[in-house]
Length: 80
View 1 (cartoon, helix red, strand yellow):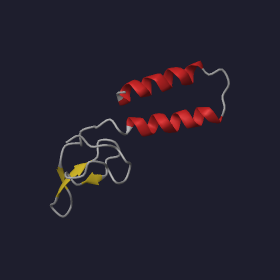
View 2 (cartoon, rainbow, N blue to C red):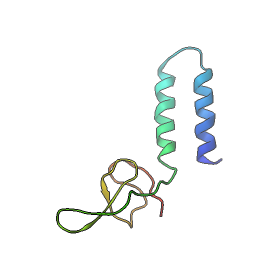
View 3 (cartoon, helix red, strand yellow):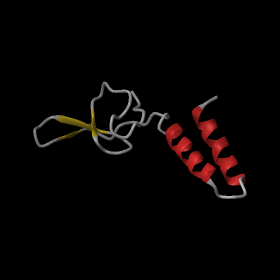
View 4 (cartoon, rainbow, N blue to C red):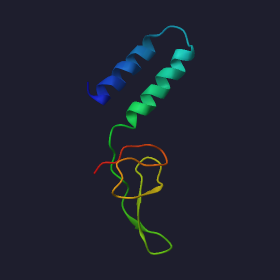
């Protein structure tokens, strides 16, 4: 199953649940985790105060190494 399809199914199921419960929080956590599996491109490179080239994470904006598959700070998968 494609990750985006799983997210869509969970969101639909979450909307159909009549009562708010602990399940709602579990769905939100699962959806957030799945969304981080969809690769996003890093933000454009910039120079930091030391003159080093920084590649900001497209999700949290923290500097990342271009060789990393995931941001170590927020867990977002990075598009290569």
